[in-house]
Image 1 (spheres, rainbow, N blue to C red):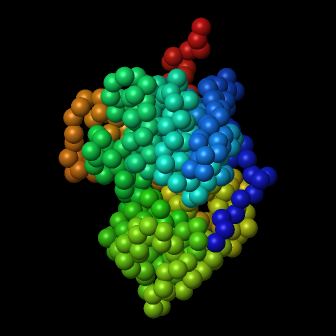
Image 2: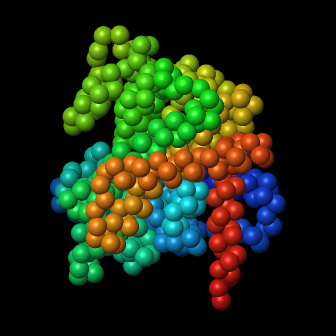
Image 3: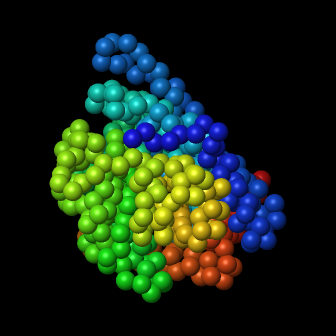
Length: 423
Ligand code: GLU
């Protein structure tokens, strides 16, 4: 199932559009937020890698720091053929807004390498990661900019980033990167944190709606780290996960899929959903998944999935964004007209960076928290942020996305004002 990519779509322009709308609602002047329309710093690097066949291949990588007003820049690194400067710029800006919305003391950044990790051997991937880390090492650091996992990167890759940076510095630097394995000062619960945040957002939403969550049907696009944790945790809450997909195919079962069995299946190396065979399970395509009848649709793959066409056709009642930027601004307006509630990425998928913050705090203090503490503190932050968004959504009669941007923008713009413009 090929995921739609439309080259006329520019994610950074999408961010600016919503930022301007939120500023208008807040009655901010141009001066109040002009600097936030630009990244603070953008680094483009060429990464030579000696491939297994002895040839040298040069990959292009980026690290973009959007804002450091509220603290060190923070954001993941993705390895994907879709990576380009505008995508990384947009993702960095979303990180600034996300960290401000959940009120953790970080700014926003993002990194990416234009590559297809599926065709790289483990050794090639390690060389690529180490050289990329070395090339961006002048601008990262525990007090400067802290990478983390994102699309196609995981705890193992974070170990290589931590080790490379530590080798360059000459001493151990665990706080330079989050999402590390537990043995390397990772944080309990970080692996499932984004999916847990999605689940908590849905729990908070249903509380506000005054409706029971048990029995609700859920379709999930993307069955990676975010999608499978969200599926498992929502099933524990009594939801029926009727459809999930990966890049190869979608699958559907009216009475609800067996999520535990599916997770076991996809965790076995190389297994794709297109080959999943089970009685009563139907294979569906990307469009069918995004437009099927479901109480809750969770796009948990990449940007630009809920386009105008999908928004017109979708039969979901509620959309909760596990991915960054899955809905275009034009699609958003259609969803609003149709009365579909879309809970935005900067709120719904913030669980990952919140637990990254906990990891960073523990690394700086060389102290390990219990998993129960991580879960409890995450739930408090997600509930507070949700309540704030809901209040602005109701008070200003705007979409939840505009409400979330208004809170994040106000917080960031105020911080900038207090600090003043240097020199
Ligand atoms: N990549 C995740 C995100 O988009 C996590 C970032 C982080 O933990 O720094 O929110």
